[in-house]
Amino acid sequence: MKYNHLSQNERYKIFALMKAVLKQTQVALTLGRSTSTISREIERNSGLKGHRPKQATLKSEFLALGSRNAKKVSVGKFKSAFDLVRVISMACLLKWFLRIVICKTKGN
Image 1 (spheres, rainbow, N blue to C red):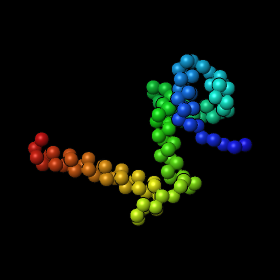
Image 2: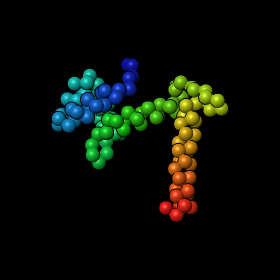
Image 3: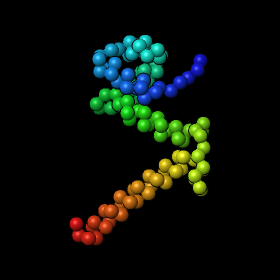
Image 4: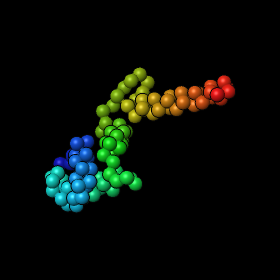
């Protein structure tokens, strides 16, 4: 059996169908997916405000960067896109921290 990840479009369809108060089995039949796939998607990507399709897609894309099957990106000294994302994140945090220090030293 071939396994396919849920697409962003499918996640939004799940969101809409759940808002229409359909049961998970009905959602699965509508999308042509297994009931367990829908169940896992809802369990993993639901918060206090219900299913979050946008956050689920971003999370899956971020996790895919660190996957062993991910395309390896060599950007200078970085061995993978995951390393590059980590460095960029640290640079953003450093920039934010420096803004706070500068504001405090100016007396603002």
